[in-house]
Image (cartoon, rainbow, N blue to C red; front, side):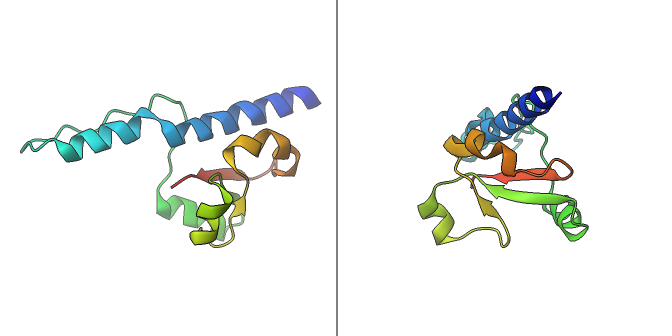
Amino acid sequence: MRYYLMFSAIVLLTAFIAGCNSAETKVSELAQKTETKATPAPAAPSDGARRISVAEAKDLLDKDKAVVIDVRNQGSYDQGHVRGSKLIPAGEILNHVGELPRDKTIITYCS
């Protein structure tokens, strides 16, 4: 059971981290470069990571039902970060799985 929970947490975190480099960024960059009057809506992310709005994130944090994890590097974190977020660089997530709460939504961000 313990390994199943750890494996589930790792899979979930990997999906969130993959969202940082998803095709979604490439689609939005391409849309900005293309000068057309009718811009199609960006495709849904293909990485399977759930996206939430700022309002939803704030609501979860206000209710103490979520934690924010900054997966960037130390330099980026030092330049500015979400207040109350915890720095765990993407490459070190697996080393810190035990530190993540099991009863809260984990919100990761990378930009």
